[in-house]
Amino acid sequence: MKSGHFQYPNECKVAIKTVSGADFVNAKQILYFESSNIYSTVYFIDGTKVTCLNSLIELEENLPQSYFLRVHKKFIINISKIDKYKKNDGGSIKLDNGVAIPLSRTRKPIFFAMLVNHF
Image 1 (cartoon, rainbow, N blue to C red):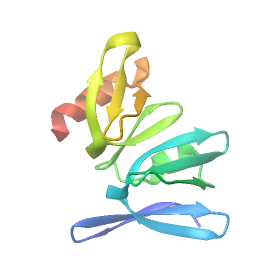
Image 2 (cartoon, rainbow, N blue to C red):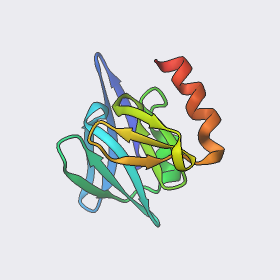
Image 3 (cartoon, helix red, strand yellow):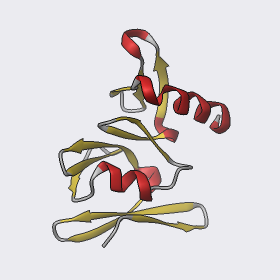
Image 4 (spheres, helix red, strand yellow):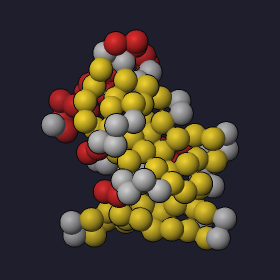
């Protein structure tokens, strides 16, 4: 099963492949995805995390762009969970849970364009 998303009134469910099948989670519950070679780890707002069988490339292709943005070769973030942007040390994005995610040089223009359009 591919990952994907399903839009319902007032919510968007994201399909995440796991060893036991697939989990369908509300996009608002996801903080970010981190690459771990061919797998990814999903971090949730409640502090839990799940290893998924999706690569970051597959996730990037299938996640709703209105919720998620790839900001680094290892990270996709939920844009509604951005707390602040710090331009020191090349740039990083602090999320609501306090985690700082690096912003790659090549993804900065996309990130700033998203800021203008989203906020």
